Image 1: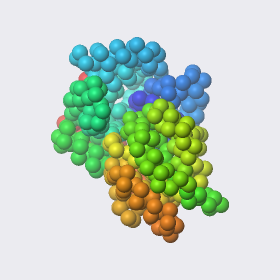
Image 2 (image 1 turned 90 degrees about the vertical axis):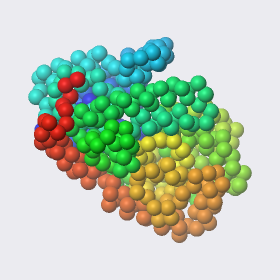
Image 3 (image 1 turned 180 degrees about the vertical axis):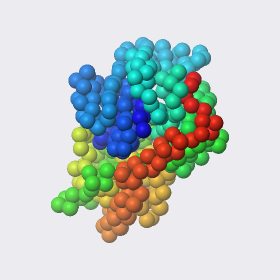
Image 4 (image 1 turned 120 degrees about the vertical axis):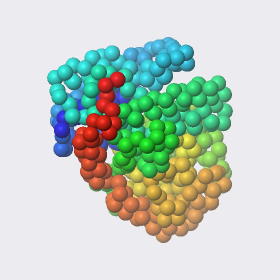
Length: 417
């Protein structure tokens, strides 16, 4: 098949943030069997310079039939982003639809569609709907999260203040967008059964396939020559994604002060781009809390720590960094929401901790019991090998594409918008 893949970011490098990892690996798996043309936006926080964009395209070019990327105009000037937010409140397209609009990308999509007779278009997020106008090509719609649900959770967060109304309004508009586009798609891809059910709550009985997030089990494997430090904890995740940022603000303000006061020998390393000011300030005053920022390879940090701590309290989708940690045989302490949709069993694959007090108890348990750490680590590794390798997930993606391409045109509308 010939597939047009439209993305809200360049899916490179493969070890980037969670959504990037998902898109990169699904793209590669699709391109193993089909002719895939990538048309993407170049997001400044991931590819800040033309040279970085060129490097990413150079790496992706041998893997796909063609690859092109275009800047996001609204990211060029902060006032434009603020203006988009104000306009989004007034009516019409929502904030993220406007923010992700590039006339240059739209022109490229039209030109490419005129030159190639595509069998499917893969849209990597619902906010890219405007790029589908006039294509008339069967649509596969990917959902990294159910975006309206994530916005509702952001609106409900304590201390949301003036943002509460904004996120609530955008949640309503996003739900309408999800409902319209999910019903037009030949196939919707969700990361978990839970997100599938959330999508159906919004859009009704739309055609849906669960294509789970995965992990490169060869790349993310523990180094047997490294003995983890029993006093060390670690978290990895880009903090330009709200659930990770909120989790690290919680860590800085409540969780780490309690953990450090309980046992001063503990040390915590946080990995990921754009750490929030509250976390940086806490690390400045407390040397036991280290903020590493973005790193090219998280594996040495994961190898060195005895415990992976995931205090995520808001979100959707599934956490790829947790799968990376499990693949590295890390003992995991997580909130219920942090492992949502992954099929992990408390006490078998991880230890659940939904409060500061519960986190203290579970971390103490693991520190006192190396055998428990080892048992959880081995069980987590087995789980990802069996369920979450990208090659296994890739086969499921290809089957979903085949069903979408062969569906009768009356079964679901195409992308003539």
